[in-house]
Image (cartoon, rainbow, N blue to C red):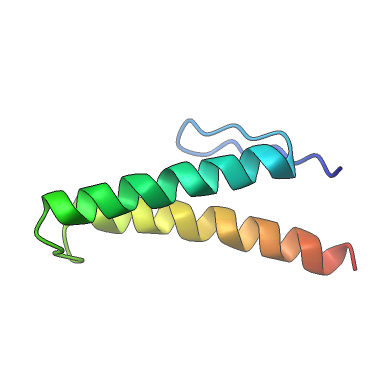
Length: 68
């Protein structure tokens, strides 16, 4: 199991499993927020969640690539 610490915007993740749970939580939150904003993908809340999600996905992918 790999251990990663992410300290950004109040998010602290210590394992890949926790990261994947956080990714799933953010996906659900993004979907709900997009729906609440009539699927306006330019809405600041939608953009902010999407960017947080992108950062976590990139973190996991980079870590997996470096560990192969």
